[in-house]
Image 1 (cartoon, rainbow, N blue to C red):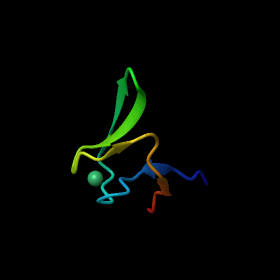
Image 2 (cartoon, rainbow, N blue to C red):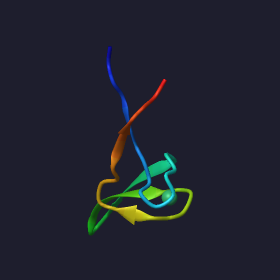
Image 3 (cartoon, helix red, strand yellow):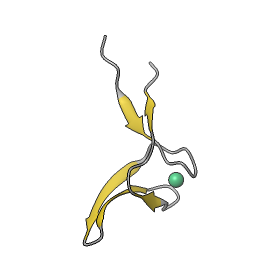
Image 4 (cartoon, helix red, strand yellow):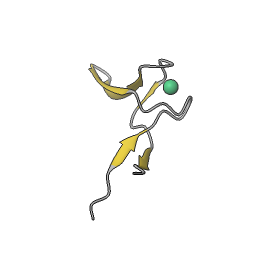
Length: 47
Ligand SMILES: [Zn+2]
């Protein structure tokens, strides 16, 4: 069995995350609350 992981917003727990590349580096950005940082935490997907 293969485990899959999703990034999750540490602020609002949304998994609606987009990837944004800027001059300052690559960020994960939450589409729900707008929170951004380098590398959101990952959680194991539950079936
Ligand atoms: Zn969020």
